[in-house]
Image (cartoon, rainbow over the protein chains, first blue to last red):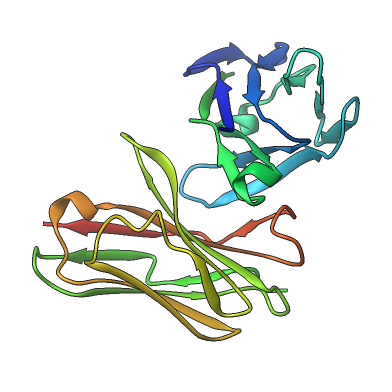
Length: 113
Length: 114
């Protein structure tokens, strides 16, 4: 079946550091891939997405590239801010799951000033 | 657009009581999802609707849980009777078009069952 694996958190970085949060997936079809972010006390919101291989999603300085050869969708940001502290979820949707979102466990990111 | 609206935002109740959570999806969206989030189990899909019809309720934990969507602008998730292990944050989300499209989440209802 389909699955998503994220790096365990928490990830603690200093402000202006480079961020990578790893996400790998298993899927039998051609999934769409998503990163959602959850700020403290709020619901999840879409950060970026990619719908086919080699697509790059980007938003708010975050980027992720759909790598079919390595089945990965790693989230990156060149210079993080304290306001980026949140929980980040990787997810996929695929025909196998009737297009339901399959979620990773989430990675908590803590940015220290 | 007001976004997905959930009420109440917080609910504290005693074991055995009935709990009703409410959701108003974004106007025009035809998919509605109910999720539960806990530290132990992460984010779990409980049930989803398409055009007010329940499509998949395989995530509903047991018969104590029920969900309805009487019209396109309102859905409820009911727990009767509630138990302490139901304590969690419950999210409602909606999307437009095919299920693989972006889901928009509400702020959640934080439920504590004593």
